[in-house]
Length: 123
Image 1 (cartoon, rainbow, N blue to C red):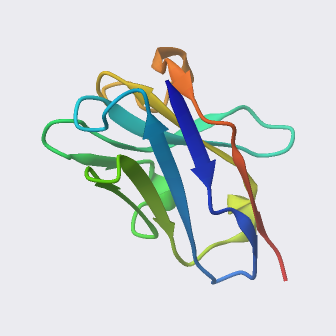
Image 2 (image 1 turned 60 degrees about the horizontal axis):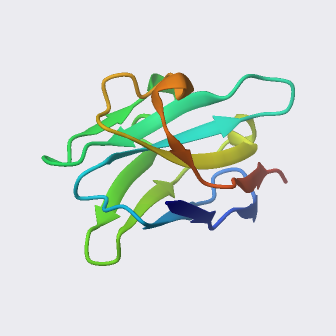
Image 3 (image 1 turned 120 degrees about the horizontal axis):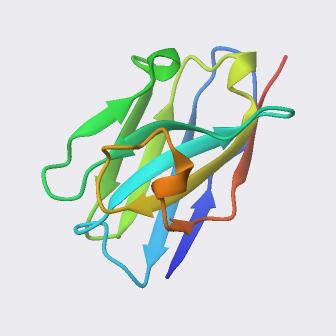
């Protein structure tokens, strides 16, 4: 199983980025996929998740209304569209898989991880 996260970069406050998580060795049809981030000096936190079967989506409050998680089953890829970015969104972003999104804020329950992609929001 491999997850390949990409799409990070440097963006000004208020800007947008779209992260991608391309999966191989498993199908996003059958696994929930979560996005996590880890800012310098802070613990990794789960920020969003999309469930496998019904495609329900979940967000923590700080990103709700700004970030949108989605998936393309044909491409076996999950996306995180990030709008209205703030300096506090600066972090390394990771994608990971679990059987469901019940504990999407807790990285302990996620089995497979991508390598991370850096997002820097700065003027």
